[in-house]
Image 1: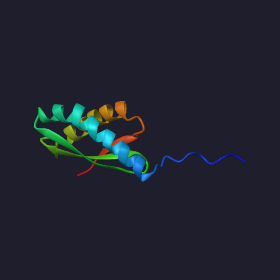
Image 2: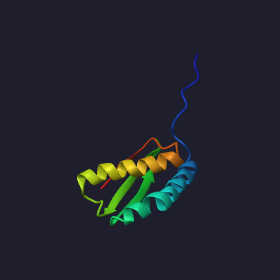
Image 3: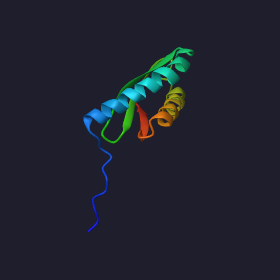
Image 4: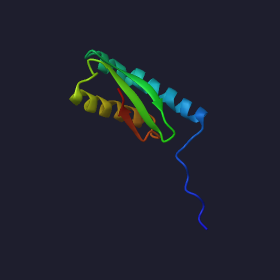
Length: 92
């Protein structure tokens, strides 16, 4: 009999540590670039499956093309530093 497949879930402490790393990347690498164009981003949370929720603010909020491009930019920066992240999703 095969052993069970490893779960993607992690402990609350591990998720919180990962979330802090994500926020640090956003603060240092992403937020300054967005601020130059009048935008901002809020890291809302991370779920058990390592999916990060972000909320776009300022000039980034509500612009359909900007939501997609900005989310991709944030995701690229975050995944470069925190590879455990599966993907990001922008939430209202």
